Length: 320
Image 1 (cartoon, rainbow, N blue to C red):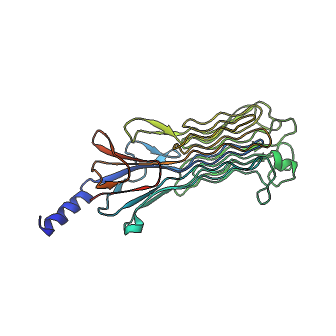
Image 2: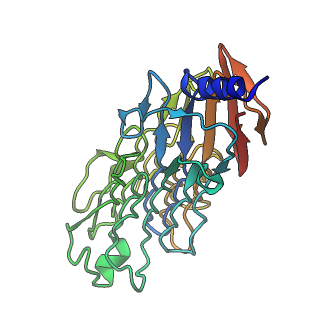
Image 3: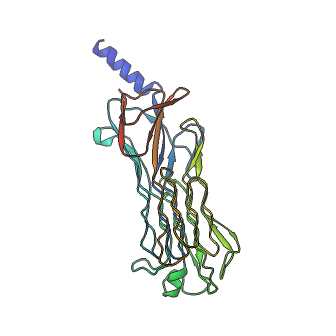
């Protein structure tokens, strides 16, 4: 084959309909301990035609394949468990990039926000949930008791963590209330499809509030619909439920529930003292194209006209 024919073939492969559709979900945050809040889900970024991205928002643009350049995959871990009584930890970002090899493409999903915990913590005395792909829930228990800035009196609301907005990848965490009758409902974590919700009686001295995590979002990138990236349930008396998609629910005692691996969901908060919150679920990166990759660190599956590559850990992929 002559050089000009090879050039034409490469150009056709790159610009004649050869594109990448992706689903990139970051690790979910971990929940808080001691009247702890649920954590937010990892960012949910999708370019799958006919679906939606986290928020939900309009899908992102597909990527035109840049031939002979390796795309590097990073799958973010879930937030690790906190110390007893303390706030959780944010999840880790997931990404698809080829910029290190001279390419121009980079897509990063942000880790989920932590659920705050009821122990007063130096440097974080306001009880607000963590910012992330989806935000974590807030808590008011230890902060009102310790004179923290977030809740200085009974009935004071404490905000959940906000979602990142550049671009939007999920939803906000739920707020919390302080009170003197044992309720202290902490917030749930935001999910990819829905902000945290609370059912039952919610407000000062709430003793029958259910602080629920926001629901996750479904994608059929592999050929079958799977829901991922739900928010963790917050704790109260009683506790909240998990958002759909593999999130951890709130828990009254021990152990706090962990989110399911490779869903990007948030861990649950725990109500009892001296207990850590649940860990977040690790993320996942899935790419598909109608052109088979020349090299990939995972084995392809197929659905219809698509070659599908699912990464649950770090790896790489390239097209010729």
